[in-house]
Length: 600
Ligand SMILES: Cc1cc2nc3c(=O)[nH]c(=O)nc-3n(C[C@H](O)[C@H](O)[C@@H](O)COP(=O)(O)OP(=O)(O)OC[C@H]3O[C@@H](n4cnc5c(N)ncnc54)[C@H](O)[C@@H]3O)c2cc1C
Ligand code: SF4
Ligand code: SF4
Image (tube, rainbow, N blue to C red; front, side, top):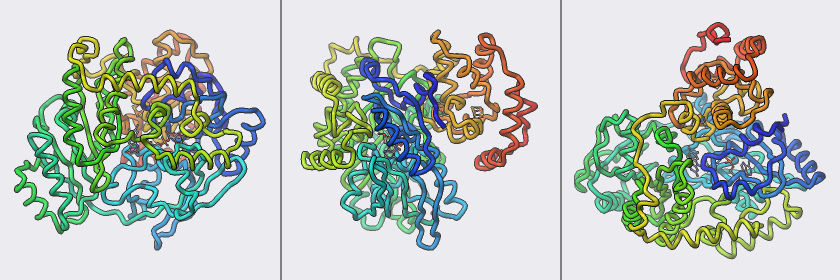
């Protein structure tokens, strides 16, 4: 299918964390979105792009953010999420071969039926496997099982001229890991999987970061305790969880470490270590809550118009200085920073430090650059940015060694001589954009020491304890995480994201702003079953169905209500077995007949 209406194409370029408009507005428009379903179709898209002198932007679920899928040249987009078939499954060998647009959620659902599971996955469960291989690769259980690339047996890649099968030992394999789709498209993956295992979670609370770090370092020295997942939360991050629990204090004003064990034989050792280090073991329901929240890292978006932040890999030994410096930075500028750090091995953590900001205020622009100041602090603490996108282009040399960059450039020239795939990004930079960003980074780094005199300019409110209570704030509270896409029966039928919750909130925002949305596009918002499935997975925990009613009445006033079309659509979707299956996945009955309950 090809999507080419302007608002729909614009929706496909929306990311979970958007670039500043001053940069985004300079980008050319993506012409259309293609949805290849096979390697051959990818190759056809390459021929088309070469013929029409257009670049190609590979897109998974668009969760990577900060310009990961932004076009720097006239481009077409390849939405890879329909390249998602499971091709071969060897239960005995515990390997599975599938197309790379498969989402982690879909893969886990399939494996669950065979009592199997993945070793690791990102907290963005609805992102694609190919997208994660092309970006970060560290997430849940990385402490226990390492980077995702170590768990891949082989990949199939498609470049403008060739299709190649690369096993992990092939020297070319590394060119496709973490290089954000610039070398070619990962079309198939063979992944090692494992038996599903029960796990237990322990939240240990401490008064300050030094005590927490002391506990973590002893935990890491233990030869008996083998956690699979360890996450550190600072005070403010735990306070966010209290907000989600309706503002009632459940998590005390302390810092915490969540430890996940699958090997329970060392439970006693862990408990005695906690006692020795004077940690407080939190009630089970608090650790269970945090574990269940792992797939909703941005749920705090519910309370803020926008969340900004920086993500970096740090040596564990520098977590304490990093926390000390960021705390001072936050205090100096009046910004409530909160930090979560996931251990990825015995030496390193991935830290994510976030703060609220309001895009409607002028300070938002300044806040965007403070994220660079935070990255600068991480670099000063021996860290490096996690992910490139376009935002981190000025920091490329901090992410890759000069030798790696040379090698990547050479490979890119060889495999993509016309610079068709994700052009002008890290290995073939756009001079103007990079210079602008370099200047931004340089100036922002000057602010990383913190200047309390500037507090009145930068200050931001900690939280608005009111939940979004009108439709403007609901449309802004969407984190654009795309989790609602694959669970939406209307999307599975129409294959355009405009009908999903993310798409409809986008349309609502456009209409509330007074932007023109053409009738054929606006009408698509009626293709909805009011089935609530989007609410079950919503990152921002939005109550969506009342918004659909409001949106429908706005569009009805403008363009009328296509009653017959709605009735036929609902009938068609409900008669599809895939529809009932979706409900089964969530353990909910699909008995409520939406044909009747839907207000046509
Ligand atoms: C709620 C949330 C939680 C997150 N948690 C984590 C986490 O735990 N760990 C982590 O590392 N990241 C995390 N991220 C970031 C993001 O999810 C990851 O970078 C990754 O999973 C992106 O996958 P995607 O399918 O969304 O790819 P996209 O964002 O669509 O694309 C990312 C980049 O890869 C390229 N690309 C996409 N698919 C392919 C392909 N098949 N072949 C070649 N190139 C391709 C694109 O051109 C783009 O440059 C999170 C994001 C959100 C919103
Ligand atoms: S209510 Fe159902 S059909 Fe409508 S957007 Fe949500 S998931 Fe899709
Ligand atoms: S509606 Fe909710 S699930 Fe969908 S993109 Fe927005 S925040 Fe994510």
